[in-house]
Length: 363
Image 1 (cartoon, rainbow, N blue to C red):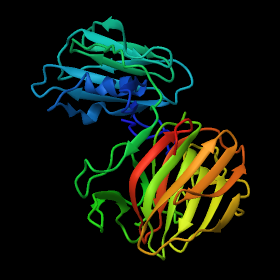
Image 2 (tube, rainbow, N blue to C red):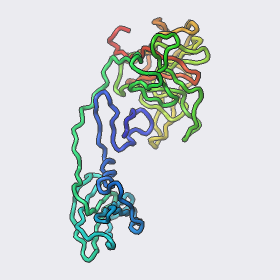
Image 3 (cartoon, rainbow, N blue to C red):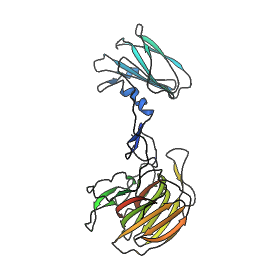
Image 4 (spheres, rainbow, N blue to C red):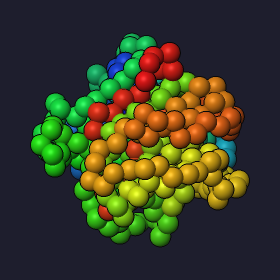
């Protein structure tokens, strides 16, 4: 089930998509019916027949039988075939019953297309390229129908003060791309905060260029809004506010969007990150000049204190604030819409009273 945001790597990889918990919308994708060609034709206890698992031209055939050998099913796939082919079958030690044939193609998924009556244990079936077939002695297969709730944009304002969670919980809607962001008790005893709890990166499975800790949430269709949070930043760490995020790469580059980074000593910068997807869905690469920030400066931050931080985006006007004081306003049209997010390094920062506010509301 794809239940993560489309901005993250490999969007839509599940057999179904359900990544709008605010609307309940879901999509039944064609891959569901590819899976059904096995799951609706075999049950717990069925076993594969070694003698009937063979390769054909551009595809394969497998067979399963029921525990008492009263029924059997074939699953035939022709994903790499170039032309139709007729397959000849000989049934031995299996019931001589009528076979009901189901087919999935690019244009039609999970359709009953024919009945076959074996003669003296023999039958044939002509199969088309790029299809799946399931001849079976069983019955009662069906294609489900559904009417999901309509898709909708996550409404603003959105706020979470993290007070409804227990320590160790993951807050609703946040999706960690690297690191682990968990609810923790604030050191001053005034409620809960969100903190990246690991102190070093893990063992990467695909690249040595893993991202720093980041957590993303929200709607890709958000346009004009402000990301607001209270943060307590260690002197050797930083807090990161992200806005208009559309792509989160699988490397050490920042997400595609706007990034407001401020250190525990008060140095800050605002960047517009330009990330594009490579030829393959998992081939994320960063292009453009991301080494020069849009603007940067220094803010007077007290040590071991909580600070109000804000990244605001309205049209091409991008502004940042610290402790409700304006740090800078620039004009940039690199990004027009996307999600919000938070980040830090492995030294950790605490976040509290998080909100995403519409540009029409007072900040």
